[in-house]
Amino acid sequence: MGRVAGKVALITGGASGIGRATAELLAEEGATVVLTDLQDVPGEDVAAGIRAAGGKASYFHHDVTDEAAWEKVVGETLSEHGRLDILFNNAGIGGTGVPVDEMSLDYWRQTMSVNLDGVFLGVKHGVRAMTETGGAIISTSSILGMVGAPNTAAYSASKGGVRLLTKAVAMECAARGLNIRVCSVHPGYIDTPMVGGAIQRGGPERREAILKSQPMGQMGEPRDIAEGVLYLASDAAKFVSGSELIIDGGFLAR
Ligand code: NAP
Image (cartoon, rainbow, N blue to C red; front, top):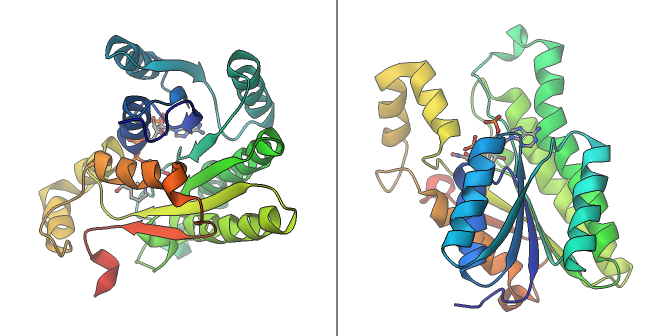
């Protein structure tokens, strides 16, 4: 308990899946959590659940592709809580399995807009907010930010971009003498609504194929990723920056 006590954390995509589990865990560990999403009803419910359990949380509607919305959310966090210590850039959209030669430019741009532009804007406004105080910025990439797979061109490109955006900004912060650590987390298959949607579209064979591809025989849980984010966000990781934390049940080890 208390591994991020007294810290203020902003979490995007906090209404669902990995973001929700991370909001709940950081709050359990003493952080004040500001969670944001497009999904207002579940987002408010997550914040209310955290408060009912004795934690501190509030929810904001926030489209991560909108720079003015970032200015508003970060500004309100600073005016309400006085500081921002942890930013978890987690909101993202999955792929729908389109072959590259059938992929529309609109689909490519939409994926980049949420998964990469959204992370860029978070990093930009996070660094501004943390310049005086320091902090930790963690962004959700994927195993598909490290290796390729068929029919994932836009998703993989966006997540590979998150991986190297992270390293560039980690070096930039270090060179400027800012006490801001910047890391990426790389989930394998995690049982969330995003993967549930892919399974629904692909049917029972898709579920079988995913389970068969798991070295440990099962998908991970959102809490498995939250535990890694908690470590990266905490002072236990004070010498960790530019790093990529893979949490994938061994998927990339073969
Ligand atoms: P999830 O359950 O679908 O949660 C993602 C949340 O982000 C949803 O509430 C979603 O709202 C929201 N969101 C989407 N676009 C947004 C935008 N423009 N602005 C603000 N919020 C937005 O998915 P998850 O599995 O937890 O995924 C979280 C992150 O992990 C994503 O970046 C994903 O790519 C990454 N990841 C997941 C897995 C996995 O196996 N689950 C593996 C590797 C990486 P909507 O429902 O309206 O879209």
